[in-house]
Length: 410
Image (cartoon, rainbow, N blue to C red; front, side, top):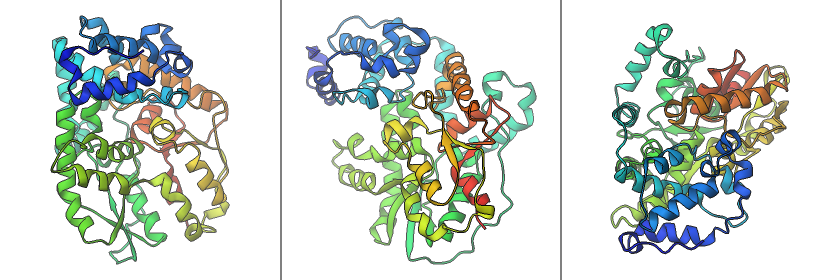
């Protein structure tokens, strides 16, 4: 499976990285068994093994076609295949390299270019929040693909904790989408962490973590956002009293943990990026530390009918499957997860549900069907995209687990 790279790529960092990944692939096909798009379409080229074959052809200098682009676009980058792969192939890194090359060589139709530009520029813009407010007003007349993304947010009436200094301080990722789409999540996290003796610190001048642009094949734009965030965070970290960078969105956490690799060749930011990546913690990772401080504080001892959907970025990207359920159970909460196809993506996958709405809805409905077998009263998750996507297909309440915990605490 080792690719004989063309001269164009053999000496580039991307080419060397791709060649190293390809050397590990034994082409066994185990990945197809857990690939969501292969399960739906049954096409070899819509599974990891087929896409690896297409990327190998691209790197060998063969013709790049619109068909290649379509098959790579259909990948959710859910990383389920990485959990399955016996050889440890970093498929996610490989498909990003392949997409970037194809993006430069295959012109997209005008409407596709417009949609992708709007997502890159719009979702990371300061105008996104007012646009969301306008969208909620116009929601009844919007097309379905947009209407599904503009659910009414839940807003807790609980006050934020008073400004006070705690012994433990953590820097919160403010992000670009979640505060506008689900403003209650960060507030809930701040209240719960305050009860556990942790103070939230914010940094001015931050932007999107870079994941959105990376998934849209704009690696240069993503790295620019990473550098901007580092400029905002490093002065706060230099003071030495911030012990971690905390994120409640599992997709963002995964992106932040990868800063060191992404900027490893940057002479100015490499060391800072590695330091930040090592300090990043998903909120799910922090939950075991919260248990001693919060135990015994649940109203009525918890609730029944709670079901957890683990986002792919949590269970396959960060390998933290089960972290939320085990932590909540330690607090005395009864919670279950789907016994069937719990590993499969719900179809959200960042911008995927906008760019590939038909496949995304099929995966959403398949996920909700499996969750419905547990007769949930409430579905909990850990990522804004998954929550919004699932909400669009069910009348059952879907919320972030930290929101539920915030409401349940005395």
